[in-house]
Length: 443
Image (cartoon, rainbow, N blue to C red; front, side):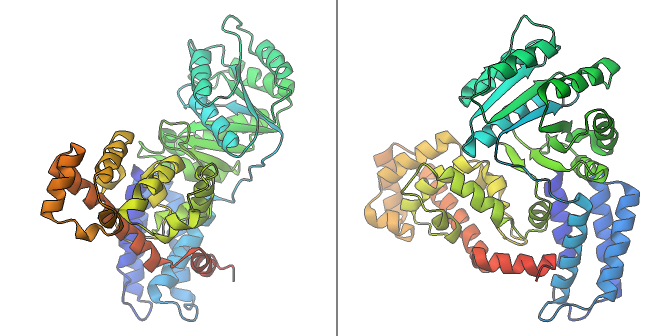
């Protein structure tokens, strides 16, 4: 993912200021060049990059570091504030009765995103219904109905009806019990006049509370024009950017849409129904800079553990991590979303977690559980007691290979190190809030 590379580039650039006791003009100029290179590679508009980098340079050299703040923290704070400003203000998502009209071109991921959005509101405890009004693309309604069935959300539509206006009228009449109604509309290969007119009509028929535009991140800077056209037609009040996990233009799409003032509501990266993330500019940028995003992490943890009385949110954040705890916590993390995404929310600084650490699939988790069932109470509580002979005994008892047992122990150590890094970097939720206040300027 290009934003992983952008985050690494930003962190590498800031590392060059480590140990500096005074603001060095040469070091700041070198940092600014590195930032320019990283942002341009992420497809952010060149003029925007130049304006941003000049502001960062001026502030870094002219502003005195706050009391108790190192040179690196001083510059990091400025970079953080300016990148947050570049993304624009956060867009509010209300958790009450509403009708959401989904707009976008064909291929943007609109139908999949509609189901993800339904899942988001469902997790928040709201009754959700979806109307499939994409009567243009063959198989669109079947696809949406299948996705909704997997998450137990009613999907209303008519396979044989080609009039999207009629589908929406009849669909709305059947969704009175729903608190949130999401309408999936048809996309085309371009912004044809009939597509624009249809979306205008559907907006009037549905009296939509929100009109959210779904944009493929691969559009890059071209996303700005698409957002503007739809905004002129139906007054778009939110944008969802999809496919952020596989494009070199993600930074361009983010900055281009932010410039329109429409506001980015969610970003999507992944194929499952849970792979939709609220876009909070401050949290997003702090994660790119290795500062974590504990607010989002705590929200996800609370949702994941809502149905599990014996799991403690604070235990995941605190890093209590014996083998006995590990499987239980992995199950909770698995419900929170992709592990790589979750770990990015921890303030790990420049610490890099190997990609292999994120590949704990359901099958691996089952194998791990079987292996742990063959361990003694002492071994589960203190993995350091597991020597070669014990490894051999555990492997034989669980029907696993010695290498599988060692893999489980390596995975445990990797996660333990990551959580220790978290404690060292932030110390806890309240401490991280204090740090974020310093960096945002909200004293």
